[in-house]
Image (cartoon, rainbow, N blue to C red; front, side):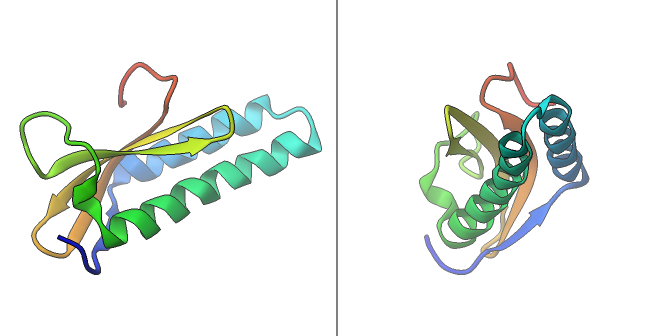
Amino acid sequence: MTGEFKVRYTETARDDLLHLFDFMLDRAQTVEDFDAVQDAIDAIKSEVEGQLGRSPFIYRKVGQSPFRRELIIPFRASGYVVLYEIEGRSTVNIVAVRHQLEDDYH
């Protein structure tokens, strides 16, 4: 199923993005590092809204529900994982966002 899906971020997912931003910003040491922080957040938002807004059912399932899935977003040497749920015929709820090296979602 493809089409136009509205993408909504839960409060937890918004907090996750802020956490990632702060985490990367605290570790930035060069101008390039600071640029990479914003690039990473922009890449996450762009992929989430672009990919999940069109085709949320093509990404891998998480657990037993066919509506709970995750999107892998490659970024430089690693990347990010976005947990989301498809609600009805037109909405995707972003549940959580984490770095690929984290053990699990918060």
